[in-house]
Amino acid sequence: MYRAGAHWGISAIAARLFRDRRGVAAIEFAFIAPVLLIMYFITMEASQAIETSKKVSRIGSMVADLVTQQTTVTKADLDAIMKIGTSTLQPYNRSTPTIIITGIQISDQASPQARVAWSRKLAGTTYSADAKKDDPTTVPSTLNIRNTFLVRVESDLGYEAMITWSADESKALGLTSVFNKIPMGETYYLRPRRGPTVPCTDC
Image 1: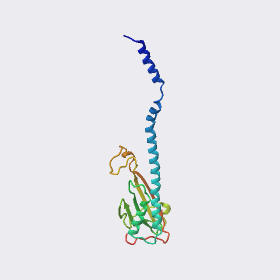
Image 2: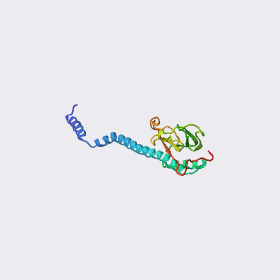
Image 3: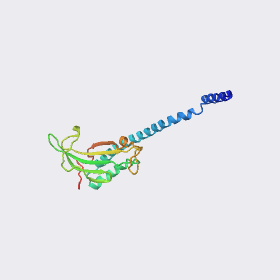
Image 4: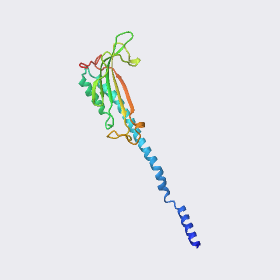
């Protein structure tokens, strides 16, 4: 049996629900919150990446400055200076830099030739020789001045984004291929401060 009262009751409930806006804000927040979180993490990650890139550049300038202030160096001296250089990255510690210090002698010729006098490398936590003595190398044309000496410092880092990094090196969030190991690097050339060259006595 059809009852008109029931029909009007359902219509009244439907009309009241249609007019009720109390849940709109919650629904809007549910849509907007993920976007806001993504923007926050991207902004945070970008600022950290920029700051780390500046620190990688600072490694090169600081290491080159310390080496060129010496009259002579040893392998132990160069290793200690490179270790100091890596400390500038702190508190970033998700990956380790590679630092290469090369002493370069430019020949006393009409067409100067740049050759390696000595070279030392830090990769991760391993110290080793890099290029061999007397190997040919290249320098910018403006620095290729006959009978001069240069110290070149190369600093490189594969930046690992926080949103993809994990302590056990497992793949995180499926974003590793896009954001992981962003290359950062800088090369500095400086001349000796206290003499014509900076020889390494045991390199």
